[in-house]
Length: 118
Image (cartoon, rainbow, N blue to C red; front, side):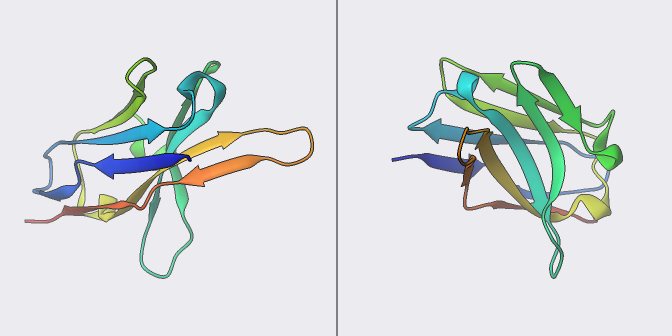
């Protein structure tokens, strides 16, 4: 059974930092594109960052402020967030994605809330 469990969310003042972690079980991180997405109330989820064997990709609004990393043996994907802004306030979700020959595989965590305010 695949599980993605996020942790590290919480409240932080503007300009501060937070580190989110995603503990993955039931999959090998080297076989999946691991990503972080966020969702605002009433909006669709948007890409924050992803990491794969081919590199990383960041959403435009977080470039230069957020860093995604993975520890394959520990099955951990992390998102280091710095210079946080109020508009970074959202629920952050961990995602595991793999292309398939007949269908793709897509897993989501339960989400963790990040609140940036003074």
